[in-house]
Image (cartoon, one colour):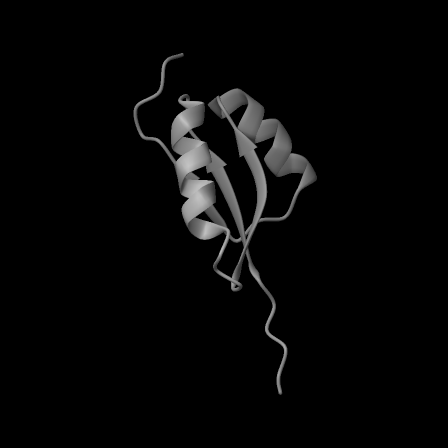
Length: 64
């Protein structure tokens, strides 16, 4: 059986409840790995410099 690499996902949203909800929905998917989460664009930019991700899931309207 071939082993597939997981898709590395980063999430940024200014509402932690959204991050928690999406994490709960996606944690059962064996093809995804949630690498980092953040509550601001600035924090996410810092994390992206330190972590490799394939997909960035972002809120398009955030304070700040």
